[in-house]
Length: 249
Ligand SMILES: [Fe+2]
Ligand SMILES: [Fe+2]
Image 1 (spheres, rainbow, N blue to C red):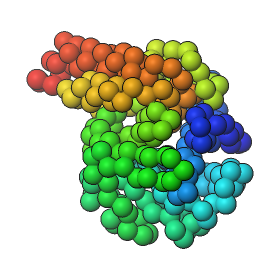
Image 2: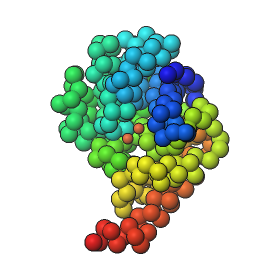
Image 3: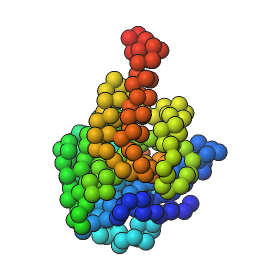
Image 4: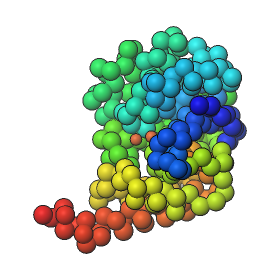
């Protein structure tokens, strides 16, 4: 396996590893994002078993020991499986996650105490980059779920939202909603809940110019429109008579 590196917004690098054996024949990508600054922040650690691959990839951008912040969307192996391996190679690094995730998992799991981020709290990483944590509980899945928004570039690090199959380009201006609906139909990865559409729609107020997908290409364009379309799709699913009947049963 190889890890490709592309700059998808000013100072934000996508480290992408394609795994053809997952959901063949399309395959599946795992992306991490390095936000460059005086205090570099990585969003997603990658799987624990891919740590060596990802460490070697990161070292093409910065010495791994310079990493300062380790952040991710929710507690799951591809999001944070290698957290302690990164903490071991980067002595200044600290995990940063929302209150739920820290209290439920990281205070115990992380080898060094995490920084607990309130909903909306910003980490100023220097060089003009500011990364805001936003709680999105159970959306698309995980009680502790959240996303991050880098304000200077308008980049939404949206984790598993918009998940799609295949190894597309690093950056696209094409449709990211249709492919994510197809992946939802296949994987059923979302914790469908009545608040989901509202939660996703609230992210549209950020008017992101780039959507950094964990599993798929990054999207450049009208991020608010894509988020509204995705929210509408989940509203439709939650109000589907079969879903409503199943909840009532
Ligand atoms: Fe996930
Ligand atoms: Fe993921």
